[in-house]
Length: 231
Image (cartoon, rainbow, N blue to C red; front, side, top):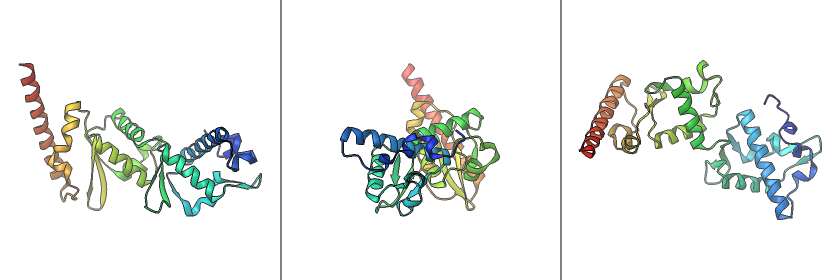
């Protein structure tokens, strides 16, 4: 979609009653569905990944100068809670003033990035955050230029899946994307000592060699288990 007009995302945005919380529960459910879809479509289009409640009055979907309508604070809070209950926002602070906006779930994002890496034969490589977020090679990727906070959230999901590990070296953040592994290996990757530490390695090459050795040792253990089960 190339249009940036909010009314092109949803005709409801030019409909005055859309900005008033409806008393009828069935009507309200449809209204909330419409608002959630509009917000997520807008955020996807503009790559809006974070939201600050203090700036709610400046958020384009929440007002329409053409029909002189704007959401009140109560309606905004109801919408945010609805988005949270659907898994589309995650609060960053206890006071619920700042949140990540997830037009795709962390699991879907993780799958998107891993498929992109795999399609380019980059499994087993080490990349900096900057290369993946802002590099020329990712210009056509959906995750290009997304907010760094959301990117870290996605990488956390990849780490939980045993598909990657992040590290920091000489002030630069990086990620090591693993080769495709079997399910047994995925479940036991968390037992690799090196992947349990968050300390910044002083020597990147030394770190990669240690990781390679630990992975090879893990593979050998799994091979021995497989051979025993076949006897």
